[in-house]
Amino acid sequence: MEKLLCGVDLGGTKLSVGLIYPDGRILDKIIVYDHAGMDEESIVNYITQLIKQVIGSNNLSESDLEGIGLGFPGHVRYRDGYTITTSNLRGFKNFPLRDSLSRNFSIPVRLDNDANAQAFCELKFGAGKGYNDLIFLTISSGIGAGIILDRKIYRGMTGTAGEFGHTIVDPRSDFLCTCGNRGCLMGCACGLTLPQRFRKKNEEGMRTVLTLGGDFDYSNVDGKLIKQGLDIDDPLSKSIVADCADYVGIGIYNIFQVFNPPIIILGGGLMNLGEFYFNRIKAKFYELARDMIYDPIAIVRSEAEADAGLIGAAALLLE
Ligand SMILES: [Zn+2]
Image: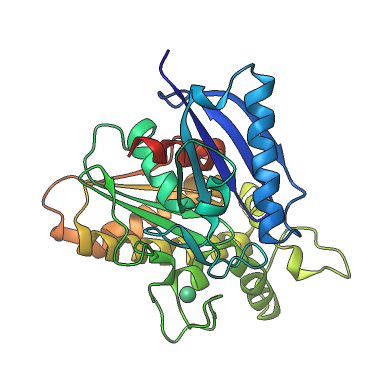
């Protein structure tokens, strides 16, 4: 029997551990939501316990596994497996995550940024199958990305390459990014900007047909609410989505100019905003790229979605 892959997707709210077949199918997985407040060592112990649990409950042993792949929501120094920084978990500044987990097992452990892992998942099992090069962008509460060149993750010098979320698309923007800079793609177009955009347009007098209630708390504005707005043709929601989509369109136009990739794959929670959003992104891209496109470029949705992080982490073992 071909060996199984173990994937660990360590997110800010969700931690999933799973056993994956080499063809990307999931054999079994465990998902927990109670790790976020823990310190680094406790999280390592928790992950260890969950891996042993999923191995045991399937009557397997460590020797049935090729190794463990771990996707981390932040910067990773790939060569020594240290996490550098994350805005989704406490701590993890210069923490030797790969070796800390490795100590509890006798099989190889791979650690990488979660968006890199998802990009590789798309290459192996998703919308990028059959391509040699691709760019993957995940747009949710933040914006992450991964670069695949010649069927390998391109990591750069440190391991932080592909942070298109922090490329600046509007230096005079009102929006500050979590990195502190003004007008990052992420600062302009990720889910975290929705409350501020909503409030601004609402206070400027733009009409909304959403029922907000008297003591409406703008911090509750999220992708779900904006999607509800889109579904009832709410002018304010449409205007926000159009603004965000235009920035993503500018972002992928820049990516196109740098990499000239045959395919750009878009994933993440905000893609649930649907066709209006996706079509607007593409329209902005084609408006900017005009007659500079000499070969067809595919701009498509991610195919792995909900389990992309988990399968991608496991797929790191196949790189
Ligand atoms: Zn930034």
